[in-house]
Image (cartoon, rainbow, N blue to C red; front, side, top):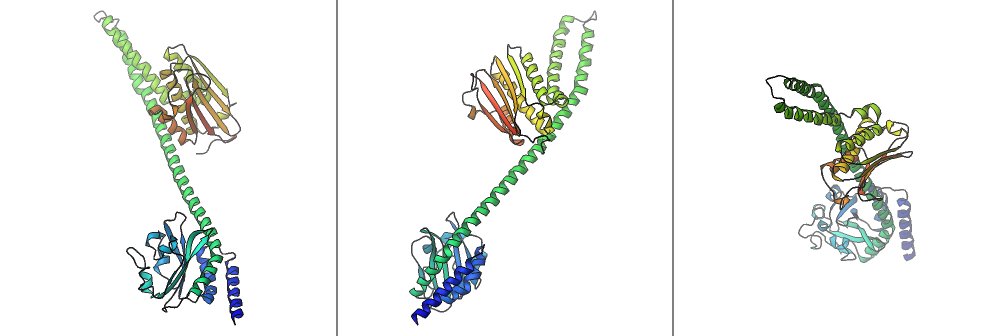
Length: 410
C-alpha cells in the first residue's frame, strides 16, 4: 500500500514536470498544474505569490476560487498576509483556522479574501532558487485542520519543480518590462528631440525672415538717412563738423546691422554649402577682430557635407560659428584651425585654438556653450569640449552620424 502511494505521488510529480514544458507565463503554469497538485494536496484555492525583483512588491496568480489577490496590481510585500514567509522569517506556515489566526491578520494586512471565502486551513511553503526566496506556493481549504506536516513536505517537493520555471519566467518578464520602459523612454526622448528640432527649424526660418525684413526695410531706411546726412554736410548753413560724428555713428550702426543680417540669414551656407560657409565666417571673423590671428580651414570630406539635410546643416554651421566666435573673442589666440573629416558614416568637426584656454572644460557653462550642446543634441551629434591636446587653448569637437550617399532624414 505504501509503495502504491509513493508510486502514485511520483506519477503526479512527473505529470507536473510534463505540464510545465512549453508554458510561457505564470497564469498558464498555474492553470496547467492545478489538477495534478490537487491530487497530491487537495485544495479549494491554490495560488502562487511571486516576489518582484526589487524585493518590495509581489503579485499573486490563482487557480480555483478567484480572489482580490490576483485582481490587484503588484502590492507591497509589507501588506501580504504571508510576509513572514516571504521575508524568510519562517520556513513554512500551517494553520487549521486562518480566519482567526493572528499570523495572517495584522495592521495593514490584505487578508480580507481569507474571511470572505472562509479559507480556514492554509499551508504555505517558499519557492527557493539558489537559497533565495522568490515567492510562495499556497494551498487553502474551507475545511478546518485539513493539512498536516506530510502535506507541507509534499508541497516542498512541488515547489522544487516549480521554482526554476518561475525564476526563469520572472527574469524574462522583468527583462520584457525593462525593455518596454526603455523603449518608451527612448520614444519619448526621440519625440522631444524631433519636436525641439522642428521648433528650431521654425525659429531658424523666422530668424531668416527677420533678417530679410531688416535688409529690405530697416537697412534701406538707414542707408537713405545716411545719404541725406552726407548731403547736409555740404550745405553752407550746416556745420559739417557737427554732423560728422552722427554720420560716423550711423555708418557703424549700419555695419553692425549688416553683420546681424548675415548671421540671421547665412546666404553663403545656402548658396555654397557648409564647408564654404564655415571658411567664409572664419575669415571674416578674424578680419573683423583686427587681431594678428592666423587661421586655417581643412576640409577632408570631399563634398560629403552637401548630402546633409538643410536643418542639420544649419545647426552644424551654428555650432561651428559659435565655437569660432568664442575662440576669437575670449581665447586671445594666435592660431585658429577648423578641420572637417569624414569616414563612410561619420562626420568629425574640430575647432582648435592656442589661446588662454579654460580651467575645467567639463564645468564650463554659458549661453554660447549651452547653445552648442543643445544644437548638437537636437541633431543627434556628440559634443565635446576640452583643452587643445597640442597647445594651450581649447578644442571643440563634434561627431555626427551621416547617411552615405543620401540626405539625413529627420
